[in-house]
Amino acid sequence: MLKIIISKRALLKYTCLVFASLVIGCGGGGENNKSDKVLDEVYIVSVAIPNLNSLFLTGGTLFSIKNESGQTVAAAGFPRTWNTYCQNTLNQLQFYVTNPLSPIKFETIKKPDLTFRSGYGITNEDGIFAWDMAIDQFYKLNPKIGENSFQASNFFPCDVDEFKSGDYTFKYEYSDTQNTRVLACNNKSGICDIAEIAPSTIVYTFASSGNSVLAISNWGDILRFTKKGGVDAGWVRAVKVGTKFTFPSLNLGPPIISSTGIQFYSSIDYNGKTLLGEYPNGALFEYNGSEIIPWAGDRPVSTRPYRSEAQSMAIYCGDLYVGYWPRGELWRLSDGVWNEVKRMFSHPSGEIPFEPYEDRPNNPFVSNFYGQRITALSNFDKSMYAFTSNKKNWFSYIDFSGTLTPDQADEYGAIHKITKDSCSTGWLPNLSGKQVLRFEITKSMMIVSLGNKKILSVENTSGIVPSAKDAIVIGEGVFGASNKSLFSISK
Image (tube, rainbow, N blue to C red; front, side, top):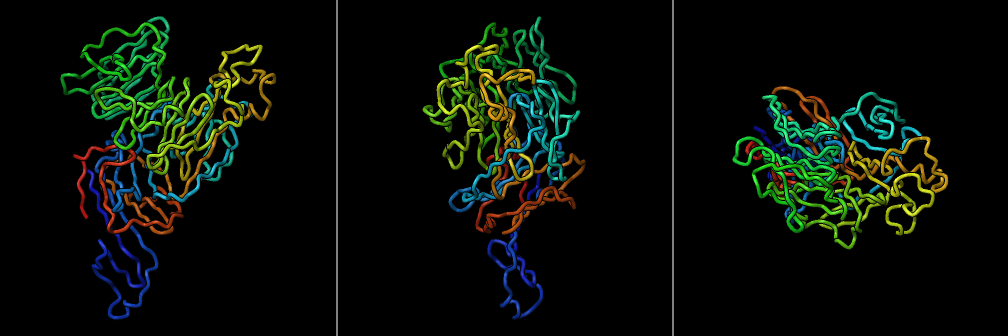
């Protein structure tokens, strides 16, 4: 059971406890208290967690604080995302105070290597990890401990192509001569339920909703696994009906034998919806547990040219960010409004051809080799990081001089740091036994502690502190729904 305790107090010369605008009691005595001035104001949420690992594996919103207009003032939770190759590290905790006036600041950090151009990345408590996909080399940078450049690493904090949900681990076993096997393995029993997709195909995307998990191949073969306990338990295969995908049969059926031309690259739990990033329309779809449908909250079709791909997604400061192929655009959904935050490449300047440089002469590679990806979005400390790439496998010996300048080539693989005020990310250790998380918001600071250990501490430059009149919503919010049956609230 997850227990949440909320309090609000004002810190005075003689400490007074205030809850719901009612002074409960003051120390220090007498009439002198009338002249005491408030030095700072603090809003505190305490979360008691019997089993941290169970919380990591289910994820979702811990709490959202709403004002009288229903707007989110602050929130905390465990995001669940998938960006092409990796699920986010599950012990990642985000905590933010909404600050609509905060500008978005950009910084391009030094790449791991001058030949680093086919980039991907992820973060964990030890830092920012970059992967050169052309040569399969990992790098690590941890600015929190004073590091200012990437160093080669033998470790990457992602079991590539593996997805965890509750008691299950999902993965695939590739084959180019036989069907690729997709496995749903129960972590307790060790038993794996197996489905198959065509030879030489892979799983591009995993996603979860409620009691089921999707595995979608690069040919657009969509499989759903429902966890044990119902008549529809096990693997089934989707069929396309109009603009949606349904599961009309409880039978798995054979793998598709050719590409559908539709691919899904990313997934995220966002505001109670499981969203999937699609190609070739750059669309976002919603998986509701029974079918996959176009998401009503997507960008207008007029802003999504054909052959676009919603490749990466993340939540940062309570907003949804999406990175697109083939022109490296980063878009944001904030308060129901979409806007292009920035294009991560400065070239080419025109919109034709749509896939950059596909019309170049003397082309020794695939025509869209110089297409521009935002392969991953991942948060660390106060910022979100956007990792970029060309289409794939840009080796150091490739001569680009007939198409790009050295400065233009250097934009591929660039890692961009994106920062807003009053946003923070930390990681929780997987400790056994009951643990207590404490969230504090003052006009100057935001602090999260686990027991006596400070997990994160950042400046609250917004100066915003939730009011005692604000409502706290448990288990619902931007990070998706949590299992409310695990929660109890004490005020």
